[in-house]
View 1 (tube, rainbow, N blue to C red):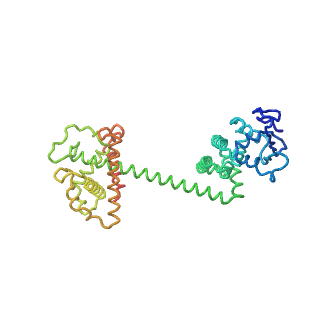
View 2: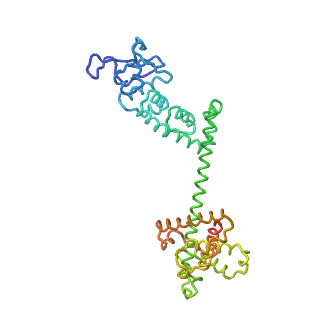
View 3: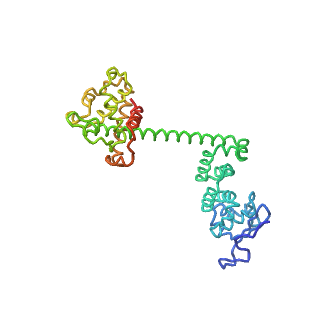
Length: 361
């Protein structure tokens, strides 16, 4: 049984004009809802076209049929046209019907209200049905929310009746959803890869700062030849990789295999010296980092091919940008507040090896 509409009856006269024209909306259940023609026409261009179409196309009875939706949904629709409001109860029961009506009769305010309400009420069980409706009614925000839910909970959605019905009756839409899921996963993988690369560039930038600190200021066990070793043997509190880098420098200085590049650890250290030389802007006489002048003089001679040269230049550029960004976000002297000092030399060495193992050469 249909309830009474939130709109005037024939005896009502809002404008006080006795010539007010009324139209009757006829629902699929046979209910007739009287409405003001001018209000209906002003709310919807579709209704305006139906009401004021040429006389030869107009039926003798002033009625507009709205079929295919529950009677109470039509009542709520007419009530919104008059009041601009829709109760939460009506939205809970007839949200999907009201979205369809607002799309067909071009009532954008109600369409936006329905889309937001349906987003709030999305579940795994109804998401496929709402998604199909959002696609038909051109509701992009609702469509995207549904797609994201399907993508994130696909295993559960796959078990619902809505998905099984979709597989049987709309293979093209099923393919569209699967393509969206595949593209979403690809974007997530690319995003994770980008974050890993950015972390690597920041760590390499810190390694460059740490190398300059060791070779210029001196640290616990490694420093410039013209500077006395530090008496304070407490762990360095400027960089988290300082201890590991000092161990690598000591190994590089004493290893007998490094001449023939037979030591992987020495090769990594060689790459760090080379990276520093590519970034360093100091005059040769002012820079105290070992091998800096040598690498500057040799330039790109060690690069075997053009592709390797392009990759190296790209690496240098990204490390420079990472260092500049890091200096803006976090002062060099305060980095220890964000990154704890490793508990042991072995842990520091592992951290350093992680950075230079991922060096693109």
